[in-house]
Image (cartoon, rainbow, N blue to C red; front, side, top):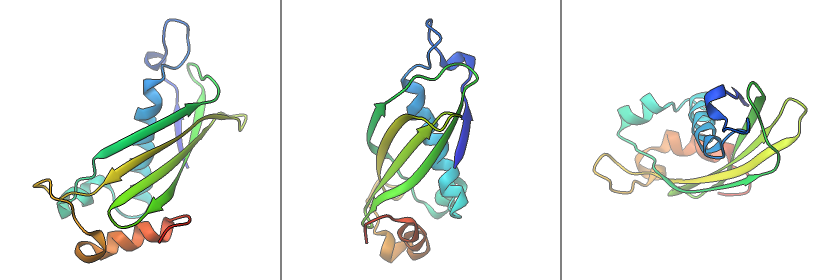
Length: 136
C-alpha cells in the first residue's frame, strides 16, 4: 500500500483535489509497487525497458481535500506478457473508497520495439506473474 497526503497545490479554488492529480498518484503508487517487487524504475532503465502508459481509467467516488491521507492499493489485474493492467483502489483515512482506477502499459526496448518479457526478461516476467490476479 502506498500513502499520499493531499497537498495544497493539488486542490482547486473550491478546496477539492483536482481530478488530474489522481493520475499522478497512480504513477507514484505504480513506482512504489514496482520497487517493492524488486523492479524499480532505475533497474528497468538499466535493463533497457520502457513501459509507457497506453490507457488510464478513473472512477471518482468521493472528494478529497488538503491534508487528507489517501492510501492506494495497487494490484496486477491482468498480465499476459505483453500488456500489463494495474488496478488502483484509493481510500481515505476512514477507509472509504475515493477513487477506483486502472492503467494499462506495454513494454518496449529503448528503440521503441515491443519486448517479450517471458523470453527477454524472465525475472521481471516472473515477478509480475506472481502478483497477478486471474491471469496467466
